[in-house]
Image (tube, one colour):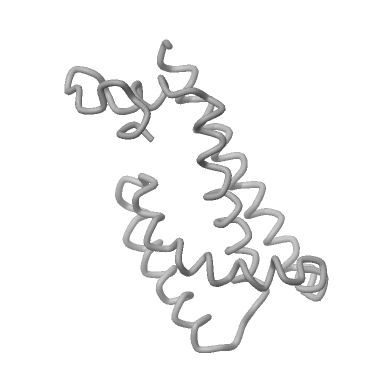
Length: 136
């Protein structure tokens, strides 16, 4: 976003967060909406489909990713390697959104709702912090 839409993205005298905050709010929402939908629907699809080899591979990848990045800086660039796997798990949800979620046990349904709410809360807080901390 900064490299594409900021007038001087390489400026060393201005922090990256303030450069990001100077980008138009509707543009940020518009560009982050597909990412948000892919991530939340991918997690939903992952939680709803179990048992195949890809599921265990992704579970191992997610587990190692969480262990490695929980102690380091959680920038969004660390999420990008997970996006192809989220995209794979989006398709069963889009194809049968009611059937795949309603088929699950109540614990999985509650976990899906909790994770989606946590992601939404995190993005709302990040959005509020970025746009309230830096003057336009």
